[in-house]
Amino acid sequence: MTPAGTEIPPVLEVKELSKRFREREAVRSLSFQITRGEVFGLLGPNGAGKTTTIGMIAGVLRPTSGSIRILGAEAVATGRSVLRNLGLVPQTVALYPALTAEENLRFFGNLYGISGGRLDARVRSLLDIAGLTARGSGPVCDFSGGMKRRLNLVCALVHEPALLLLDEPTAGVDPQSRERIYESLKALAADGLALLLTTHYLEEAERLCGRIAILDEGRVAAEGTVAELRALAGEEPTVVIVLARPPGAELAAKLAERAAISEDPGRFHLQGAGAERLLPEILALAAAEGNEVEELLLHRPNLGDVFLRLTGKALRD
Image 1 (tube, rainbow, N blue to C red):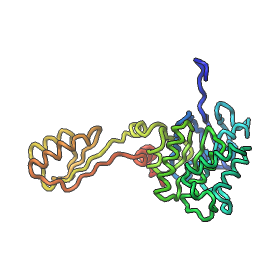
Image 2 (cartoon, rainbow, N blue to C red):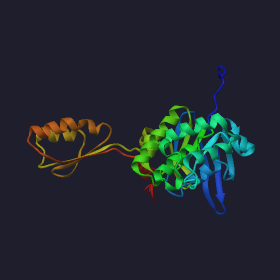
Image 3 (cartoon, helix red, strand yellow):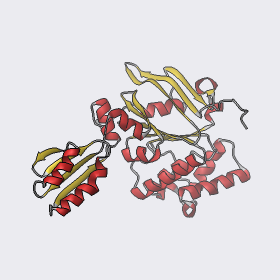
């Protein structure tokens, strides 16, 4: 138990982290921290610095400057003893295809000095998490891409790390396997594991991450929850309604209350906080005057809209 008044250090703390490759600065003064049970996302296009950041935290790349602390200990200075507290799920599947799923797990467990009954229990548990219990004795070369991704994930958990680094963990995965991976990650976070997730999938970041840092050319363009990022970018829901004919007096008055922008006599744009809450009343008025609604669109801004507003370019540029 932590004594009263003692601050619990974050699982991961990154301060002013930078990495230069000759003339190119891939990561520039990056700072963030992750607490126990949190999923923190790094969102950005290819080349934004996500994988380079993961590589520095994992000890694969040495930072040009800045510091990385894992459970309060400086990772760059102390090396392997600290890095044992993290697991890495790389962008490229890192498995031995000629071995079975169980043999892969045992291999990685042995690398961390795990053996005997403890390893037996971990293998059984992790195969269950991955949904591969029935295929544990099958060679990985016969697995589908989604099965390999799921096994790749649990191989990083065999030594029970405090921090899990995930670099594009669902790239090229079928929808069913992606959903299973999502549920596994949520369960791991609920059990107290800290997760750092890099992705360029907007839905993935929105569904999994409590906080997100949007990276642009190695810098943090913005950081916060999805709601905070939307507010920071000034993004609000937009409603588009198309009527069969121009509205009657009462409906026109209601649309005017929201300063609805009319593109033509029957097409209106409503924008701003709470615009979607007016829809039931607008639809009821349209029905009362016998005016058919030909088209109705509700757009809630996503992280791609936020990225475009903050950086001036699309997420995949």
